[in-house]
Image (cartoon, rainbow, N blue to C red; front, side):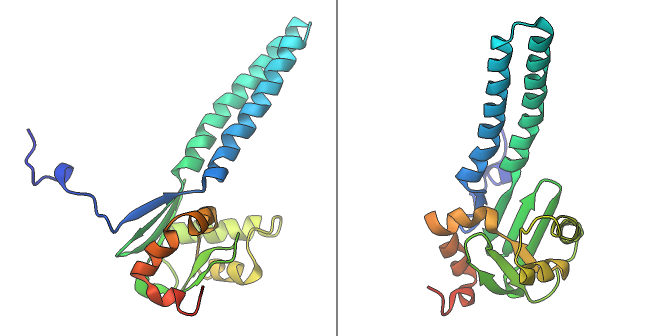
Length: 186
């Protein structure tokens, strides 16, 4: 039997809160994959040619196998707010900052994030910046001022968690640790 002082018995830190991406965003991946799979299976069922049936069923199976890890990747994404700071984890990268490095918060819907005083270090900031440079010319995920901050390693994107600002207590959790971010904001 383990000692009661061991980490297994340590109480959870109530001031540390983890948020996953919004429930709507989480639902998009499985709903789309299941819809495509269903269409393929119905097509296979209605098709008279055995070769076409097999091809459609095989394609549905491949799509299912591709969809499982995609669902896990989406579910893995999380934002953690604690007395030490804020951390965003996504599959393959992680960015974080202590509260004393957070200069401002953007609460504009679809553009939520934290502006930092000093650049982040580490692989996650480099991956985020590199992805921004590759994808940004093709797709407009971020406003120009946020793109600049991402390239300077001074932006923590929080738009996947925007739902929690509006429908839960993410705003209050951040304000508890960094009240200066909300001075003058409603």
